[in-house]
Length: 73
Image (cartoon, rainbow, N blue to C red; front, side, top):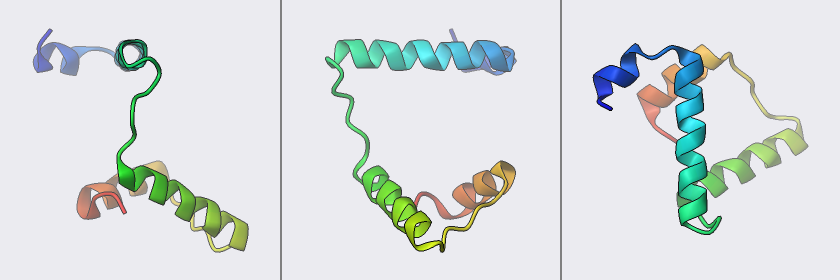
């Protein structure tokens, strides 16, 4: 399968493929797929902001644009 093949797939098939990939990674690692270090920090920050009532929500399209522009927090 090439990147071109994947690009041509319908979204539903892409999601099924992603799920199969994650299942494969999880099985091969014994359920110990490590998240990047920044991920735990970002989750904690989001939880803290929600608890304080300072969380800011944006539409998914805007969130993707912000991530493309600035990268992960």
